[in-house]
Image (cartoon, rainbow, N blue to C red; front, side, top):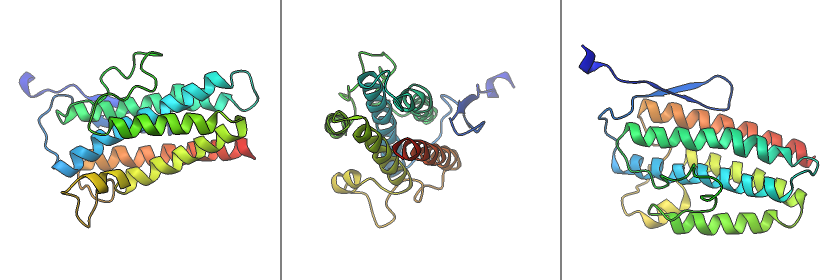
Length: 203
């Protein structure tokens, strides 16, 4: 009986008290499309965190800049950790194993098939957000819209570079894996909350 026990990891997402349960090291199977998308989302959640932490440092002390600290250091950190733990539960390689070595790892996307894509995104988003605080808040809103779209449907870059993506695409609308659907649904809920926060500060 003890051999059948598994340690349950509670993935607390920043959308209230929602918990996504995953059993680390339990042997479960995703198809190649699901695995590719989940790995991609690990880097995308890290991207959001890294941009927000960078902009938080840039505008420290200015009105409305706290939104970057609250979301980046809190919610997005939780989100990227949640995807990391889900990768572990399926025995998939983490493209960013040193993601939590801060601040050294901010903007570092050397690992994974799409590291180049996220490195370019990070540089472009930080450059846009460095114009002024209002521009930075718009970057935050853009990131959340991008994140929701890429969670629900298949990111454009995956469609372009993966030969096995058919008409069904990938993401929340593709998978029938309960744990993934649960995780993705709560990530989308979180992005909706973040988007509202950025819009409120812009207004």
